[in-house]
Image 1 (cartoon, rainbow, N blue to C red):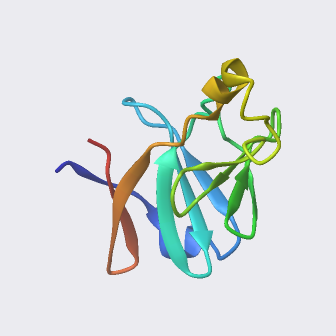
Image 2 (tube, rainbow, N blue to C red; image 1 turned 180 degrees about the vertical axis):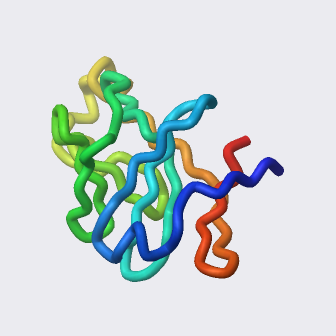
Image 3 (cartoon, one colour; image 1 turned 90 degrees about the horizontal axis):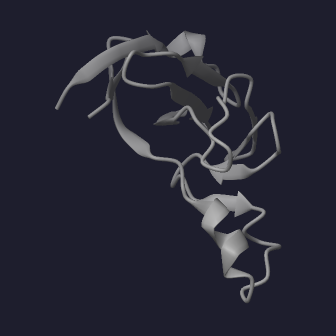
Length: 114
């Protein structure tokens, strides 16, 4: 495991996100109800950065096309819930956000970016 310190807990208040640009690729931190989650900082829809993404409950809202992902699982919530099952070419846009292991030590947020 290759843990990297990305922020302090107070820098990601509940209901907020923080975008972290790393050489290995961006990571998005999301604080949902006091739990810190770390996910890929690129939206799988068009690979736009999630810098400026907002949380709506547990859902990360991409600032470009408003695709939404559950910060707890990385799974797409919207438009997954409106795409018809028989249009498989659209369903290819619904890849989940990659999730990373997070640990908190003395108020620091450490993320395993491997």
